[in-house]
Length: 253
Image (cartoon, rainbow, N blue to C red):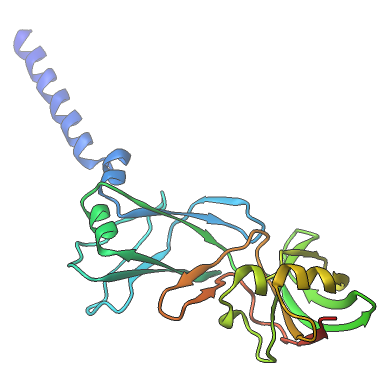
């Protein structure tokens, strides 16, 4: 009887050991080993939760160094040697590429487990601007903006980019306050919008007599951008570039 009991105990211990070896890595261990994590948001700022399937690439690495986030949104990059500036590029279908820049001291602290990086990754706006036109009446700029988008939401957002040159573009923005509007709600079809010209002057620091050019793009509700240290420009990854890109203009009085 004792021998039988002993054999049963041994078998139980062996089965328990096998089960432990076949389990996935403990979440805490995965967190400690990870380089960072990614949390998804839609264009309206609603959380999508930890985001799997995001490709994280070290820019200009040769051979290419990359990783893909797991079901919990974690990713782990292999050890990287000392570089002055390390750029991580985050990409996934339906999302605009986002870049994050690291000094060596910051990235090295991540590699050593003292720190982590967490990225809030926004979906690209589904809003397509089909046409844009305007008229001026006194101090008011009247704007007609036709948009289309899919999804179950009745309202989405556009954002206006403005500059004092005709080649206005989100790719040429260096001053957020001067050159970028807040998000503006739109519905499918025609939208009639109004801007106070004097308010634009006060907020943007343009001068009397300046001609201001504007374009509209589908964008996120909450402004989403990063600063490129090389070009010294701001980058807006979630703007929808499929529209017609009509330009409207007005003169500061």
